Each structure stands twice: as C-alpha cells, then as structure tokens.
Amino acid sequence: MNALENFERWKEFLGDQVNRAEKMGMSDDQIASVAEKMGSFLSDKVDPKNAQERLLKQMWDASDKDERHSIAKIMMRMAENEVQH
Image (cartoon, rainbow, N blue to C red):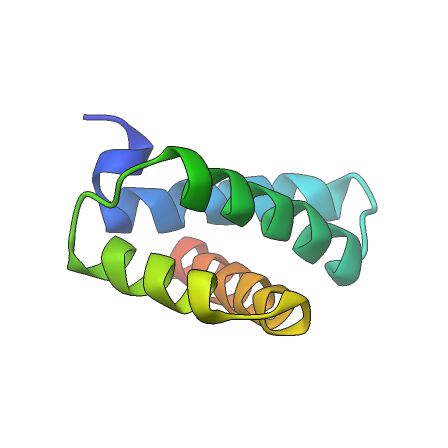
C-alpha cells in the first residue's frame, strides 16, 4: 500500500515533506504553492481511493485559485499536526 492509497499515510507523507521544506528555508506560502500544484496534479491524474479523497477532490474541483491555495494551506497544517502527534 503506498501513501496515496491511505488518507492517514498521505497526511503523514505530506507532513514529512512540509517539515523538509521548512528545514530548507521555504516559507509557508512557497510550500503552499507547491502543495497547490501537487493538489492540481492529483485532482487531474489520481482517482480518489476513499471518502476523504473524494470529498477533497470535489472541494478542489469546485474551488477557484484562491480557495485552492487555502485548501493547500489547510492540508499543510493538518499534515504538520499529524507528524507532531
């Protein structure tokens, strides 16, 4: 099972990547921009595997650019909290 097949593992994976980016000196906005690009890629290329991913895809698809940036920042915070706990 890879990180994209399980929502909890996905949050852990994203949290690890956010921590790495912060250690490299990237700002929250820079990280959110990368997360936004990743979200667009995933929305276009990956079929949702569970209810959480389907909801996130529906929210992503219904959002404009600013809202997608906000979703990316929220996912970053959720992922960071996952790593800290």
